[in-house]
Length: 308
Image 1 (tube, rainbow, N blue to C red):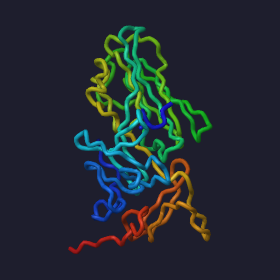
Image 2: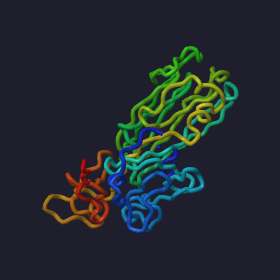
Image 3: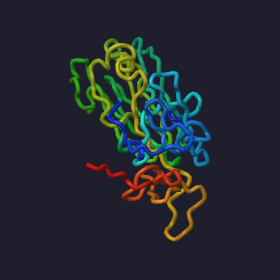
Image 4: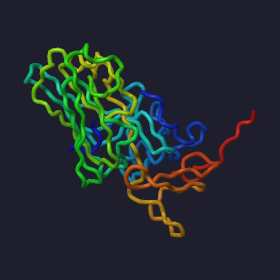
């Protein structure tokens, strides 16, 4: 089981607070962008620019070997590309690899399936913003993992079709050519399994895919069933977008009338704490009438009023 997401471009996740106003969203002296992706604190490029005391996974790398450069996060061998970070919603959009099984005959096949474990990270897959999707004819795809690191979870779906002409271009993933299943909240680990050891449709549909992708990203195409790795080569060479919920996991909002705990992240005046909506922890928000970055000292400032 990998330590980080190894199996998590649409309209952007909400623009980080302060990005449009010209106010700083990063620590002084630290880069506030990697390519065209803003990097708001507590994230940062390099340990000294990130809130590493809260979690080492807030430390990102900026890969300038690709065009445009992109921030990345994860452990060696399990690094994913980031395309957006939202302070307001506590969300991150990442590009994740695709699980697949490909047949060369009815019983000869190759597979590439990967999993992830998020127990020590600030991240959890968003249950409301993602779907588990299986693409192919006559295939059963399953996801299994753990909720709250204790309760075992298994779900999946079955996709059926006798031939490509039995499918409809752009049809919803309701079981003909593709199917989908919802995810639970607080899913800390996940594995993908294809429940098939032979295929009757390999001659026209050699590869079957399973993805956890952003809700609404995938729309069925008959071309996805054709050719070896045709779906990956044609539509998802860099992976599929998924939405990750992030939060300050090692703490909670202070009780009213009590002192703030050590390492409390909402350090800006005119900021407040809200509980995370997926898993343990909390997020910081600027108070009404203010915007900016609540994780920075004096990061929440009065909203600028444009004169007409």
